[in-house]
Structures are given as C-alpha cells and as structure tokens.
Length: 629
Image (cartoon, rainbow, N blue to C red; front, side, top):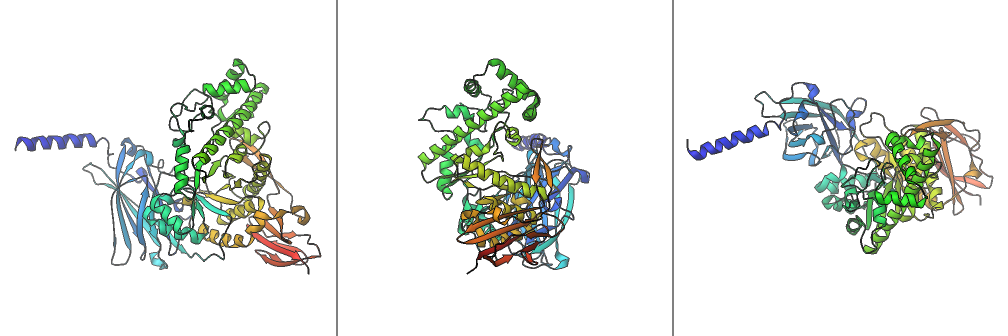
C-alpha cells in the first residue's frame, strides 16, 4: 500500500473516531424516540384533519430520550406514506435537510423520503413529555387530495435513527387516521377587519407560498405577521397583508445591554430602555433601521414583539433614573432589589407594605420608561421612512399601575404604549371555555376604554387570541375561537390574530371561512357604530360569577360567563350580537325591542315569540333592526 493511501486511511479512521462520539449509539427501545404530528398527536384519537384540495403543512416534532441526547446531533431518515392524490411540495424548519425524494407506489400512495441532521436543541423534549415549543419542528407542505377512500384514510411515518454502530439502525413507525374536510367559499370578504395569524411555521413554505396563500385567503385570513421571499410573493398575490416582522435581537446594542435584578446582562435581546432613551438625538435607536427595511419590503408595515420582563431594567442608568424620579434612597433600591431577587415574579403580591409601595413605584417607572422607549422607536422609524406603520404585540395589561394586579404581575401597563403604535396587539390569552371567552370580551372592552384615556383612540386594537398553548392537550374548540373573534370585534377590536396556526387543523379553517363571511355583513357596525347596549339589555338572564387564574398567579372574577351581548347603532339600524357561552344548553335572550323597530334580518338564532331569541350552545347570533316606516 502506498504512503498516500496509508495517510488517507489514517485520516478516515481519525475522522470516524471524531464523529462517532457525536453521533449517538443506536436506540434500542421505542422509548428512545417519539414522532408527533401537531396538533393530531395531541388530540383524542390522533386524527390528522386536512382541508381537501389545499396546500397546508404537516408539522412534525421529534422527541428523544436521554441516552440518545448524549450526541450533539442525529442522522434521521423519515419516510411519509401518504394517500393517493397527495402532492408533496416542500419542507422547511429547524432540521438540516440532506436529501429529499418521493415516489408513487403501484397502489397510488405517495412515499416522501427525507434525510435530516437534527440537533439536540431542536428536539421537543423527552418522549411522552409535553412539547413546550412553538418552533422546534419541521413543516412538510403537501397538497391534500380532493377525495379519499376509506381504506386509504391514513398517514404513516417510518423514522430511522442512523448511526455508525454495527448494530441495525433503530426504526419507529407511527400511523395517524386521516380525515379530509371541504372548505366552502366564503359569503364575503372583510374590507376593514384584520383576521390574522401569529405564525411560527407557515412562512417556511417558501416556494409553496402561492399555494398556501390561496389556502389562507380561502379561509378568510388577510394578515400574517411574517413573510419573506417567495412566501411573501405568495401572500401578496392573494391579497394577504404581511407584517414585516423584526426579531428582538435587532434591538440589541453592546453599549446598552439590558440587566436583570441579579445583575445579569442579556446580549442579543432588547436593549436597556433607559440607555436608549438617553442616546444622543443624532444616534438612531437600535432596531429602527431594521424596522424601516422591513416596512419598505412588506406593504409599509413593520412588526415586533415587545414584552418587557418585570425582573429586568436594573442597569445603572435605569436605577439612577428611578431613584431620581421618586427621590428614593440607596436603602430603598437595595430593599426592592433584594425583595425581587427573593420573590421573583411574585413580588407583586407581597404583603410587606414597604415592598408593595416600592414595587408599585417601580411598575409606574417602568411603564413610563418603556413608553418613552417606544415613542423614540416610532418617531425615528417615521423619520427614516415616513410611510411606515408600526404594529407591536404586547402583554395584556391595561389597568392602573398602583392597583391592577394583572398590570403589577406583568410589571408594565402595556396600554400606555398604544399612542406610539399604529396597531397594538395585546396577547389576551385566557385559557379555555366559557369563562375564557367572557374574559376576552371584557378585556377587549377594557383595552378600548384604556386607549381612549391614553389618547390613543386612532390606534387600531388587534388582540391576539388563543387556540391552544404549545403542546397542550386541552384547547379552544373552533366554536370557542369563533366566539372569541366575534366577541372581540363587538367589544371594540378592529381585528384579531390567532396564536398559532400550527395548532389549527381543518375544522378551524372551516370555521374561519364561515365566520369571516358572516362578519363581512356586519363589520361596519363594529367599526363605526355607536354602542347602545343599555337600550337593548336582555331580561331575565342567568347571573353567575366565574373565576380564572391569571398569570403570574392571582385570581380574576368574570361576570356572567354564560352569555354576552352588544348593540350597535349605525345609520338608523341596530345590530344586536348575542353569544351563548354555555357548553351544553341553548339560551334564550329576551330583548326589549321598541315598537317602532322591526327585525329585517337574523342569523344564528331562532325566533320563539315576542322578542325572544334562542341561541344554540357555544354559538353566536345576529339580529338586525330598523325603524318602522
């Protein structure tokens, strides 16, 4: 053997020795791996429900045991077995694609094969754990067939963990039942109301963006917060507005790192607001340039997620300003710091009067501070690009800094940021069920009232509503999401976003199409109408007080969680919106309709007699009145 061959062989052996500790030993038991399709694997019976004839993602999460995780990354082979008529489009996500191919078998089924390198930090926990992630996943975009024979109604997956071990590779096979549901054309399109998505996966579609855009538009969606490249082109082709999303890392500055209560700095995250406020006027705030670039590329809109942490803001500049604002002593600052180090996010419920006093001052200071920070971001963005419009998602707090527990728990009053945004998007997540829906409605009304006090009446209010939390087995049904949408718009919102589309299967898209078609008839009442609720308040309704746990850990009361209603007057007509929040029984609304008014239209309700209208469980109805001639 030549010297060159000996050297090459030596190099190969060394490489294999270096690689082998990185690639895990072959897994030996089914407990080592788990493959989940979201949301199917979280639902009873694990059915995959797709919209027939449309392009949508199969979102895959992988979990692996501790023995497997001894390696840094893993060679994974996947083979999807899909029903006849399925078209495989593309894949995108967190896994590194090495190879992709597909074939049609003699029976017409489609086999889509992929080889990936998957890093440990892209695994969604241990097998059997709740997958607490929105983004540790891979999306496989397919066009579902128009029809499906019963014997072909399944999707199966083979997963092989390939290693350098001489033992056979471990293989896992999963199978999910498949249902195809039709998507009926909507009765109308919304002109003024955002029905949008806060997305973690759809933007991965890339070259399949046009097909996904057709699907979203058919479902009634008209806004998505992030889109780039081919996916943006696909959204624009179907009239879907995009938000020009900017990640929080763009707002970081080495000269202005944010600092927490323990003195830890956070590189790559939002800058210290006080430091940014005090920057010279000729220095642009970090993030402004990126916002302007995104606005230029995305229909004029720039979007970012800004949720100040209640345990941050402890830079020297910030503490000096806090001390000066309220004439505090070093001992005051030290007491507050030690209390927050010990109590963390529970400081807001401390019963120590001095800690409670100082913490309330801190929340008021931080609210004013982040408001000035947002004012500078917005002002400089409009200086750089006057046509820009800013949409910001924030926490749900709108109450007073000295008394509202939700505001104190979050550490800032987010409604104070509204004057410095064109659209503000509070995350009004409230859990599930009747109490949650009524809470959302009350909170949207509270936000609208707070925005008027903040002199932000022209800012558009577009709350983000919850489908389900990441990895949760409980969820808001399509009917509950529909009630949250209708209730939010009736209470004063100019649109809604849903969190988040990976958790939505075919019944949700059907619901959106139906709901947006209905709302197209009534959106002018919600946007321009005058609230006249007191004139049409229903009689003899059930009275009850519900409770819910609000983050970080206090109880809220919710009035009358069995029902909700609004009345809007516009151009001599009255629109009455009725929501039965009960989960099992129909509910009768006895509406005092004046004799000079007559009913000209109704839907979603059954007229009984007199002025009594019955609404089915978990449904919404509309009654339109006009003056008698």
